[in-house]
Length: 112
Length: 121
Image (cartoon, rainbow over the protein chains, first blue to last red):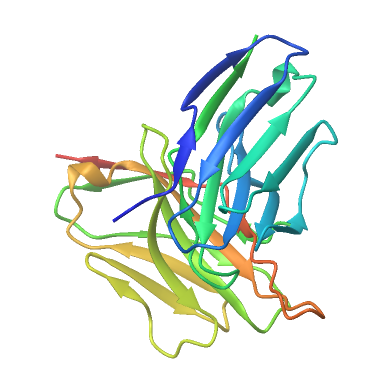
């Protein structure tokens, strides 16, 4: 069965640089979520989209923005990167907000 | 206030034995979902089992079962016949099914702190 695809899997950036993370949901899933998991921590909700519209927003810094495109893939844009942004970033998708969320393999971002 | 609490930072179990991972939650929402995810050392987040707040029976998925005690607000994961490959971090998560005026539920997950399970041969 098709799973959530995230790219890149690993990303190394310098402070103050920008990064773009991509997420391709499971086919026919219309809802996408982004989570951030710091080292040794539980995942924290950042933002979600339903049918290409932002549906909810969590503890996402103003330096971050995201969108969902017409083909339902989503991108998380991160600017002015800080050391504290180093984390595992997950995208999850579901067939509506009340369906089970299936996670992608994550993008491990390291900010030097 | 912590919405999901996992009080066991680490658990050990002998191969082929059963183990219970604890999870308690706090919500005033009458409709919610409870999930367990497994995170191996490789990092991916694997869905294991789901329990809806209105489900009358405890959920089961193969060797996984969820001991749902609604009055106690607990949703413990039971793994039967543990295998070496079960060694991983396990997260309990809750989705509060808030429906806004537009009929859309937000759906975000709130996670517990996780429990590291180690299976000994």
